[in-house]
Image (cartoon, rainbow over all chains, first blue to last red; front, side, top):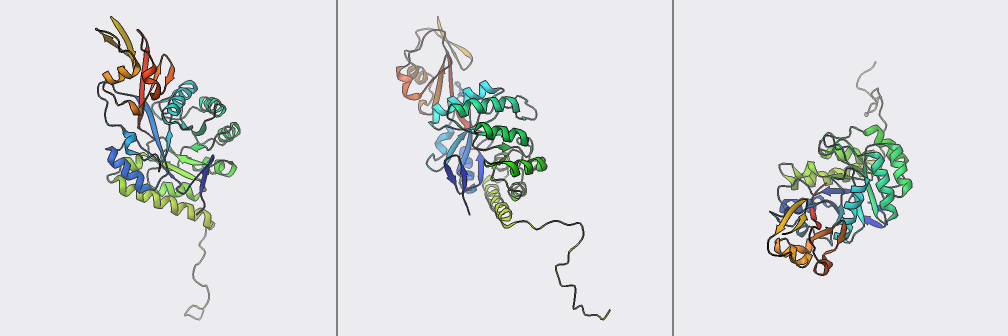
Length: 257
Length: 69
């Protein structure tokens, strides 16, 4: 299958995975492997001085996976830019998943601050993958300032509700000239498949894999769903109709009327 | 007594401040290779921890990667 191209990199996998909420670093690492992902997201946080625990980066093979730091926790553009710079200093990589989520209940992204931060970061040489609401106009504006992708949400982060924004996602996909990565709210492999069927270039999944009873099995399920959805998109879906259209011949029945 | 604000909390040093950021991190028993520091809003990469002097009242942030989506 053709590769996913983001900025100057090519990827075989169209499933990005997040590393949050796993029961252990070992399970996280096994799930990433099982998902066949090549891009994994991480968050930047203060070290707990009283209790500095196991370093999670030790469990991610940096030669195999592109680390995509997010700016989660940022409430405005300034905080997102600060986090991006810290992440770049820590990893030496300039890729960033831009998240600006001032609202703690729905974690919906702030479009104005996101656009502002994206412009600053692109100008400073970052490869910016912005998390946004499924807003086609915002997606175009981000593309215009030079983001590498757009990452519209399917439904609120960690909500597992699936493609609540489908109609808007379809418009974004139709209009985008950068890869569209559907992010957030994909709770089941069928949700991921649906996103791929409507033409998303990739999806990002975290919670649905991390908190499944068997995260490694769920990672495999998502991997297959993403592949199936992509194949279906490329194959071209048959049109829907209200009435039945017989699959079997309507002639030669074993009767004489 | 000399103090530092580390990750938002005031920490007092009854004897003396650590000489450098590397000394401070060692004293805190944090694995230094995977963290990144900000001293009074200025980013310090781990290669420079040993060269960065620590002075009274500085605001120091020590951050690292955690699981996230």
